[in-house]
Image (cartoon, rainbow, N blue to C red):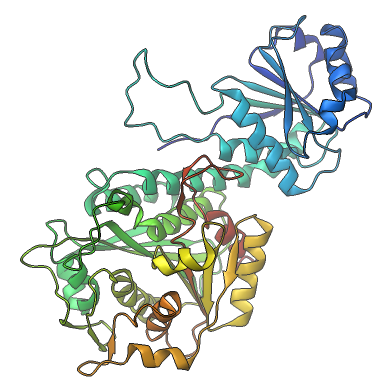
Length: 494
């Protein structure tokens, strides 16, 4: 697993400034007076820091961004980053500043002169999140790329113990985000259904109870919808159940259900060749569930949460399901398959029903890279939310906004159900091009029991992106780990 950069908080040591390697970060506002340690650095650099803070160029630097002084005289550091950050920054600005430092580090260490500034733990969190690179499959020879992740991050603060206590849960969340990014980034020949299940089983070392349900057990449970998706592949289909029991023993858990299609060819309804390589990320929903469970266990969340993921591979073969086939779900409803590329909802239908039958959850949230229509609707800025429960959905929207993870609620309604009407079964698995994301949610809603608060999150546009985001390099984002961790903290912990 990719591990976030080491972060430590220490009391300022002005005497060590001259010999400090890597990069040194000064937090300042344009034209403002430097703090005591920064003034010491200014003297060592013969006034370079003070001149930079007073320069017109620094006035143009946006909040949370930095101006670089390369190879300054008087110190061993290869660069000084002058960061535009007020003494009491917002969480977003603090994280943005940390991300700016991580981008500048290029494999070197960072020393942040924080003094009495607030939100230093959030700055460190931003640096940790942005300092990610999935390079496990790259050669490490002389021609290898320059490091994209920072070395150790040291934050000098007048209250190091307090900052460390505040950062500890953030460290656990960063590890959960990295776990999700690694899973989403892995190629399908590495992250098979078996390998995925093995990585989740290893979470038992953190106190999570993990069960792997194999195909024979899934057949006994009647998961005909899920099993049909994987029957064209040599890879065995599995359901992994992860229980974190941090709350009261008798408290109903929050259930998180994830689509884990480790590779999606579309099946018999084969996708075009162009871009099919991106379908290694079609297990993104299961990846987020896994990352959230790791984060909750890492910070010892005082809540009961169960994560369930359906792991399958959708391949065309002589045994694959065909358009026109009729499947029987665990619930007992029959489904006419119109398009075998609408397979994620078939997986989630059985996983969600199993979650309710076994755990009677206090609420249920499913995540999936479900529809291309979601990207058309919201692009790569926001995930789509669909829900039968205003309080739960509202709490999730609030949590996503607080963590800077964009989300937007879309409508549902009986009028869309007519698009799923089948002449030969209880429903079709697709409703046509119109309102494609909504009809997918309507399909899943049929597998939600009356009285179960439920939110469906379509993360098709945000699970992996083609350009850098505020806190992640291009590629897998880990979207949802922070929002769902915040939701658990705000709504489900005592």
